[in-house]
Image 1 (spheres, rainbow, N blue to C red):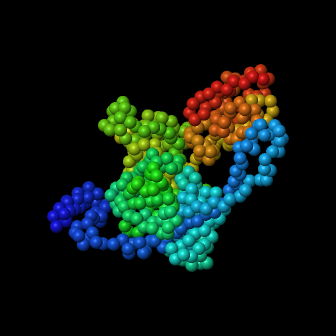
Image 2 (cartoon, helix red, strand yellow):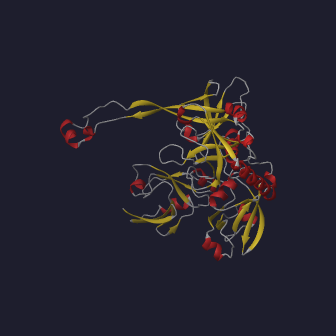
Image 3 (tube, one colour):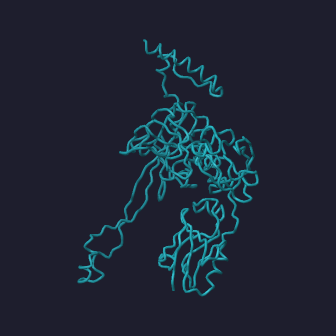
Length: 473
């Protein structure tokens, strides 16, 4: 009895605190009595669980297992190069499973990219055991999201409405629904244990909801549901040393899911919103040097010429601390907040410049395809023979997953038996100079190989580091 009295006393004071500090969330309440603790999630589960599906995939993989004796030079010397089995690799059917969420009554399903990657066949099983063949509408590896479609013969299927994932708070109760280990649909409950996790390393645009609701293999692509029955996240990964749940699961926020869903269903691809800045997280040392009271925000160290940020008046040295009333703590958070803004919209940025707080409005645009790529395969007598090169633009950099502010001439592809490959040139290298000549575009690069040099000195940038490649005829 003493337990519930103490709990009630604490709860009442907690509610007063929430109302006074967060009036927008005044409808959230903690249990006030033992009767409240006996309440059930069953009505909520009955409403949303039919929209969570099981996904089974099949793909054919080549398997060739050969004894190392067949590759032994001793045996080949006496029996010839044809020694050993000559038949091709055997084929094997590989099965995998995951989960998905119906988000539209027409059969549109959201799941993880890694659930369906490489699949030859995809089967969706509803909670009532009906099975459907699914087709892939689109898949985005960078966000680990995929969109499927099943044909239900004009029947309206159960679905879950999206909810604004930014409304979540640490401590909110959530349900995780999926198909762990293939045992069938399972529902687990927990709380939101953290928000804005950016160091998970699952995808490029890392910004995850962390929950202690039990999530296990097979839950990938399943639903993270709020107490009002809204979809707030797509369960994607767990932190585990042994493969099972240890109470740390990660879900992709629905604000990102909706951007990917809209892009893949309407345009067939995801267009990444862009403002044209790069920066670094403000740590305590940087904050002290700038006269800031605490470390927060992103220090801008590069602005793309004539890009949206440049036109808005953002300059090197500014610290972005907020976007549309959302706090910015690091570069990953800034990327996520920009990535979830509609292309063509305008966002308000809060900055610190020389100790003063200012606000600017910036246009959210798609990365421009300027300059034109001028994709060229290099042939002839040059150390880059066999490489394909192109002019870098923000659009191309986004496509090949490079820094969107990178400029110059980039290696797009290399023939594995070419001189460029033998000299150590790699895909993603940016050509800076050839024999002291600055290289700004593909035409300049081609012109630099017209001279008849006996030696070549090629300066390249690779993953932020500068290298020199020396080649003699």
